[in-house]
Every structure is written in C-alpha cells, then in structure tokens.
Image (cartoon, rainbow, N blue to C red):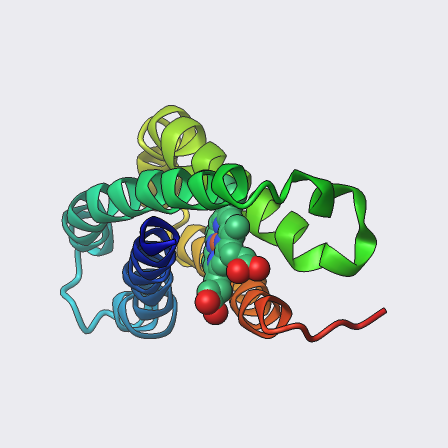
Length: 158
Ligand code: HEM
C-alpha cells in the first residue's frame, strides 16, 4: 500500500500549492492591486502575477487529478460516486473539473482576449468582478478541503 500512501501525500501536497496560491491571490494580491498598491497599471501588474501563477496552478491541477484518480482506481472507490454520504468525493471531482475549465479553457479564451479590453474601459468594475470570482472559487475550495479531510477520516453528514 506504499504506492497509495505516496499518491495521497502528493495529492495533498499539490492541493496545498494550488489552493494556497488561490487564497494568496484572492486575499492579498487582488486587494493590493485594486487599491493601486502594485502600481497604477493594474492590468500589467495582474498579468505579470497571473502569468507566473497560472503555470503552477495548471501543473498542480494535473497532478492532483492523476493522484486522485490513481487512488480511486487502486482502492476501487468508484462506488462512492453513487453514494450521497460521500458528497466530498463529488465535491473534489466537481471542483477539479471547474478549475480545469477555468484554467485550460476560460482563461486562454476569455480572460486573455476579453478581459484586457474590459479592464481598460472599466477597471474598477472589471477588477471587482475578478475578485468576486476568486472569492467564489476559494470558498468552494475550502469547503471541499474541509469535507475531504473530515470525510476521509469517516465523518459523515448523512
Ligand atoms: C479528479 C479529482 C479528484 C479525485 C479523483 C480525488 C480523489 C481523492 C481520493 C480517492 C482521496 C482519498 C480518500 C480516502 O482516503 O478515503 C482523496 C483525498 C483528499 N483529497 Fe482529493 N481528489 C480529487 C480532487 C481534489 C481536490 C480538487 C481537492 C481540494 C480542493 C482534494 C483534496 C483532498 C484532500 C484534502 C484529501 C484528504 C487527504 C487526507 O486527509 O488524507 N482532492 N482525494
């Protein structure tokens, strides 16, 4: 079972890198950016930070997915997806799919093409929406982490 222990340790390690980064961007970077602490060109500052973090997040998401599916396969946990008491397994999968969509589809197609124009025309509104979106993703992530740690130790809400 050493392989499952390694997979679990890597799973949590990359969750920490990924969700920790989301928390940092949401609670530190975006507020500083919005009030002009990172310079008057908010778009340039945002793109410089986002460009660097996006690759970390993408790599971490791929590794979280690989280790998560590996554990499901090795321990044959697929039946859990038919049982509502394992809601935290559904939460992990849905959150993962949501971030895959955001980072691999929406970001290159929407954020890079449309956001710069919007941020130049209406910077206050554009950055306020960006921060709201990050708060939503962070809240879902934290609920998932709490549910997964408690759930994998046997806690059940139902
Ligand atoms: C493809 C998506 C994912 C799959 C298939 C998956 C699968 C798994 C599996 C099988 C476990 C072990 C459960 C057990 O021991 O009973 C686990 C644990 C865990 N997962 Fe995921 N996961 C995924 C995504 C995520 C995401 C997105 C997060 C966080 C936001 C996350 C956070 C955790 C945490 C915190 C644990 C508990 C580790 C522990 O306390 O030992 N997982 N995951």
